[in-house]
Length: 274
Image (cartoon, rainbow, N blue to C red; front, side, top):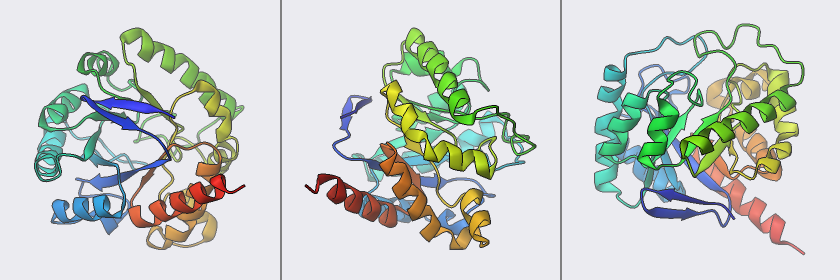
């Protein structure tokens, strides 16, 4: 059983948990979570079973361009402050690769830093998270959001992702980060084939003895494989989330919390069966 110290609040993983996605961005690839009333969305996610709410203001879809840290702070701070005020028992994660944004978000109520670049896009990030004494979601990505979709190459995607985490975990531990979560980075600098290979062999990452976060929700590997749209990718998401649970995922990062909670409940009952 994994535990995380989230600003003095101990989060224990007796079973897999859900991180709900709240995008404070105007160009999210999935419009279902763009809601004028972020508090209504937060309440629904909490009621449906989300343990963590992940707030992001920087678009990371393939081909996206970055905004300044100041703009990002303007987007996420009102959302974090409102959720923290209204739902003080809910753990908030800040989805950012900027240490400046992370510091501002933590002051506003965030208790986890979720960094798609694992410190590679801001050299101050890892040291800053260590100083803040927070859990750190460390994700694998080849390239950057602006170019990661342009012909990603691997000799062995599973081995290279594993080697990346071995090195990165040591870097984080040396800096003083205690609670490290690893995210294979589905869709981030990987082809559809890379994503399925990584999912199929994701249990290899369990040797690192860290919680594994799976972010598969409504991604192109699902809707392109099915020949459908992002809006119609919920069933496919549930299928791949279930496979991720079977292969060691401790956290599901999703747009649709109710369906993920049902998958976890059924998976847990299946695991307990004699």
